[in-house]
Image (cartoon, rainbow, N blue to C red):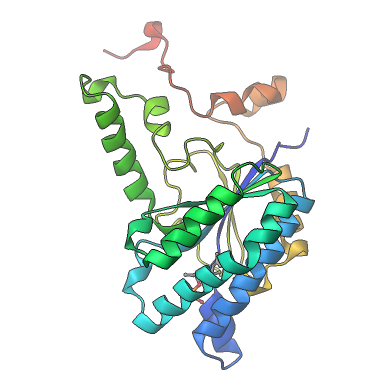
Length: 260
Ligand code: FPP
């Protein structure tokens, strides 16, 4: 039985090198990268994927040269201005996760507007991570849980309680994370949410990662044996039982097996 796939997360890396290879400025790579976002949203919808989460700007990307940062901000704004009407019509819900308070007021208001205008859509949930960091998300979730539960102690917090305060609280965890651009790391993306995610690393630069490459990644994912801590034999005997166990809020060690 093929693994079920609802949610793909992507680290879109390699725009700069794509441009450099063609002796062009890095920003041209980002322009091509932004155009590829459009293609990938369509490709994911065509594949029947319900959730797509894209890492567009990390909390560490502020370290880049100011002109590159402003080109990225400009592209994000342009993307919102040019795509929202089509997203509305195509049933795509757009959300942005990350600390948006650092963005220019115009960009913040376009983000709010895009989220409101697409809020009733559900064919594809597109989440753009911008000024996002996985560590920021977990810390924020803990603080938010504490604020919502003033009488409680930290030992009352469990995995489900924390997950409910993450910026992705109403999204399922991604089953597949794709990183383009040849690096094999998570780079502070969805640290908590990728605990049991299958990680697919490809050398293709983001502007070259097309619908055929997506199909290849999905095919690779479908071949994976997802064990969630169980043995191969247990998985073969009962393959369907695993996914529900991925974020167990109950202690997994039965009392009889506790090491005291
Ligand atoms: C990584 O490539 C890419 C980014 C830091 C930004 C991703 C942005 C886009 C795809 C365009 C704008 C996004 C939206 C949603 C419209 P890199 O610059 O690190 O490439 P390199 O590793 O080759 O230098």
